[in-house]
Image 1 (cartoon, helix red, strand yellow):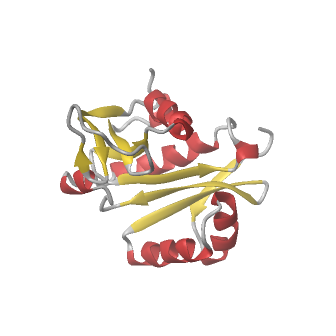
Image 2 (cartoon, rainbow, N blue to C red):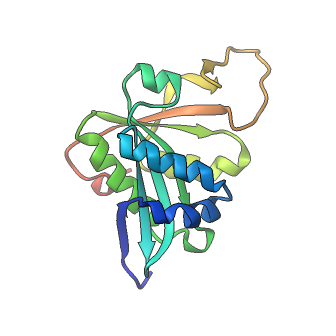
Length: 174
């Protein structure tokens, strides 16, 4: 990548571009802006050459019930424009998110889907040192018992957490 990546907090005027990036509704990002103003979320935006290339959402009180109960801030969403992937943007966003989380907590969490389209996210978080919760799969807030039948959709996740230390995340090995 020839142009530098800059990370900043989301602004109201970013809503259209972020909705387009994710194929989501404009109203969802307008809601995120309101929640950011109230302090329940922080949305970090990555820009390259003045254009939005991705974002990450930090939920300070995790939306996932298990992470919420354990007071673990959640990296609830990470998206990078397809044409900008594999250029360090996701890493830059998560580095910044983890630095912010480390100010208030000793670990960060993520509920990562297990469907095939979530494979790249699984690998990304594993390479950063996120480890699976020892309780196994979780479906819509409840752990899945052996022998259970569940639907593979966005509600089926593997909870991952990473201990945050004083050194920067990108300087760790593994």
